[in-house]
Length: 325
Image 1: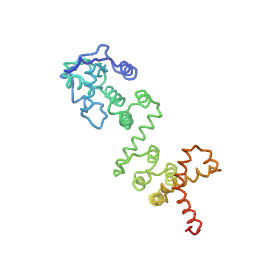
Image 2: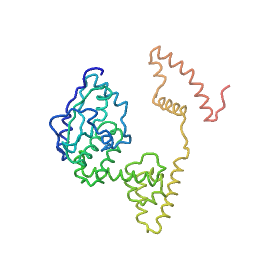
Image 3: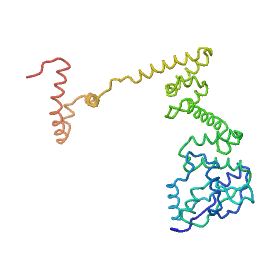
Image 4: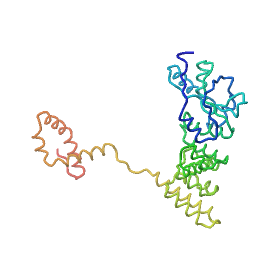
């Protein structure tokens, strides 16, 4: 084991959060935890709303380095249904435990123990794993976690309390997350992210119309999407499919017009316009020249010797004057 023993502290903010929001018992005294005390399979699966279920080795290495430098670490949060359970389930802190007990080969580490209902503990694990660590790199995880809780029958006000947001925010986030999952089924070819207002519009359309409208609709401006949805909802059901195809035609025409190559201003033209515009502001060039220092005059003469023949040639071309022999 390299460096000093790991310094552990109780995460008072997390403990307070658990006590206030979840119907679980938080034990005052930390327990000593060894690898043999952990139900590893349950710890990797319960409440881990991550795309990757395994530990990230880079994260473990970084944590082990901090531990060796005596940086204080918050104790892991572990669960037992009751005192009779032999092994614990890690709700929060898998990477810290691995860094301490495996990477640094420490025999034990302290952990905060909670006991109570297994389903409530799973919900707690879902929440704490959206509040820090690797999951925070993906904002969609929070919405997915909220929706999972709603599907388990947890009331919206309770979910809002868990995540520290308003009831309306929970409703909006979970509704949009459901539409994002629906799009992955209806339009599996879609790879790019879908804007939030587009998810709101999709919620008002039938699956078949979403398939017909496709990605052109998803990428259309919000105002256009609102107009198309209004037209579809107001049309008789018998003609909505035909109208959806008609809208696709309109979207294609808009996209074709947008993609047309427009005339662009070249860099030399931009420079010439800017230089001439600045010269227009010099009302009396002669006075400006003779009021300058000798060094400034020398610089201006050198520039005029280069520029004047070019300007004279340009002026002759655009005014159709014969060139001076």
